[in-house]
Amino acid sequence: MEITGNGLVELMFLSMTDNRIVETINNLGLEQPTIDEQYELDLKVRVADKDNNGITFIFKEIDGYTSDGEPCLTQIDFYNKCKIKLPYALSFDDDYKTCCKKFGKEADYIDKWMKKGRIWLKTTEEGLDFLVVVHFIDKEFSQLQRIIVVKLNKEDIGDTLFENKE
Image 1 (tube, one colour):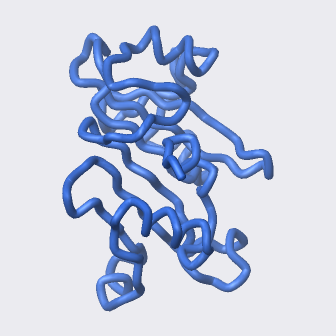
Image 2 (tube, rainbow, N blue to C red):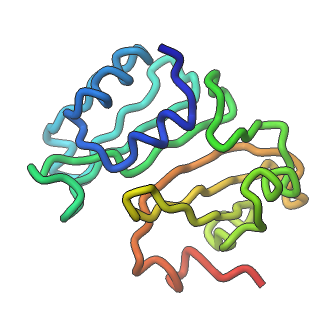
């Protein structure tokens, strides 16, 4: 089974014990997520690629997303060392204009925390909203550095982290 960025994005909002999550993490050679004392402090479970191949998963418990209250996949980070096909046909060689063409529009938001970041709003077939945050290596937006697919909290819109693109 080939693992792709688009395939990973399809796993968003699934419980960390869902068979598809377990199988994917096994196929990537990562350790399965576990709830431990660190979870009690951070309220999230982080699964990082121990060989530093460029993928990190974050699981959090979110009301209404899993029926059993288990943490579900709320964030995937793709770093420039990532060896799988990136989501949305993106490439780490892409500049901002190329990203806009691939998304079919300009970015919806500017990442105010990371000025070299631009944000696109996406929605799953089930109507769940998430963001695709693209960080570039420079202020000219000449090349991708990191892609973050993360659950959207509606209260974040208008928050200090995002500003409308104008």
